Amino acid sequence: MNKVMVINSGSSSIKYKLYRTDTWRSVAAGTLTRIGEPEGEIKCRWQGEDGEDRNRAQTLPIPNHRVGLDRIVAGLRENGVLADASELAAIGHRVVHGGEHFSQATVVDDAAVAVIRGLIPLAPLHNPAALDGIEVARELFPDLPQVAVFDNAFHQTMPPEAYRYAIPEYLYRDHRVRRYGFHGTSHYFVAKRAAVLLGRPLAECNLITLHLGNGASATAVRAGRSVDTSMGMTPLEGLVMGTRCGDIDPAIHFYLCRNAGLDTDALDALFNRQSGLLGICGVNDMREIHRLAGEGDANAELAIGIFCHRLRKYLGAYYAELGRVDAVVFTGGIGENDSEVRRRTCTGLEALGIHLDPGANAARGGGERAISTAASPVQVLVIPTNEELEIAQQAFAAVTGETN
Ligand code: ADP
Image (cartoon, rainbow, N blue to C red):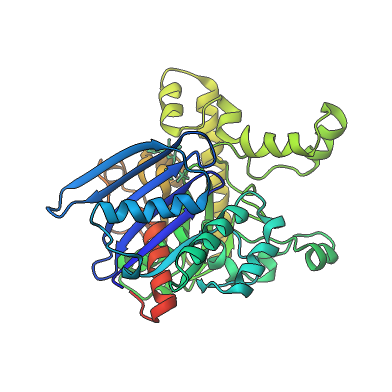
């Protein structure tokens, strides 16, 4: 019982990662894609007995999630990484939406399954797939605790002023319309690491955490707890993202319905999958956008400009909410790697006590680091996120009561 598996189950895919609980090192990881199609794909990498990294890719039909999970465990056995499922202390499942019911990782029983199922209308794309993964795992390994780790749980500490919308109360009461926030596992992980870098308990830290990946969100953390976040009832609200528009005037919806002949599904696709960076300049990969901007593409330049402008607005808003900020934390693919976005976001904020060190910001190399000057009252930190590790540790803690 010295290992924990983390599963992120999508509608036609399963991603997994296996951790040892003594060192919290990942010993194997992989993805199964095109589940339900004639040809599925399995990719895995693991550490051989000699400590060398190995990997393997296979193409074979994976009719459903049950066969998929079975294949994962069989593959781990063949590769000598996991003798048997009894070596697992728990499986941690990423679940996008826990509504208002779950404020922490939860060992799944029939009642929890029913609650997660009841939340499907709030996360119609994500929760059914997560449930599939959980139910199959419960069937295959009935003696193994299955732990659900919810992407919105960290934000359950938001006060009503932050989570309620200015719309009639019955919509909240009868239809659960409120802000929930997402990326909570990542915001919490980097907040904990920031506290370590700042050298004080998380409960004494005020932070603004910026998770900038394909999806993007900002969170205001007061005394270690989320008090506001930019994503709302769904992940569409807030920052500019790869393909999502983030904040827009809600009246644009009615305007487009009445004048452009778009129906609900078309608007959903437009704002979730055809907007954001992609909508502005035709590309959603930030590296490519920088390349195009460097060649003089005005739309690519504008995309970076709108992205950073929105980010600065949230930074300013959360600064005002918190009153005192110990650190601004950048994470996610863009936050961790894009020194230009960090520079544009933080420049000119010296009056707020934010003094970026241009050299440290531009320096290559990964890892946790400060990119503010030594005298900067507000530290600016880059902290690589690790959502899988956080899920693994929360799952382990939920079954053993031990924290790491
Ligand atoms: P996801 O949200 O899908 O997990 P990631 O956190 O991996 O995504 O972030 C993906 C984004 O990070 C993409 O826009 C990608 O272009 C960007 N990115 C990754 N590496 C770099 C880099 N070196 N410079 C700028 N952007 C980067």
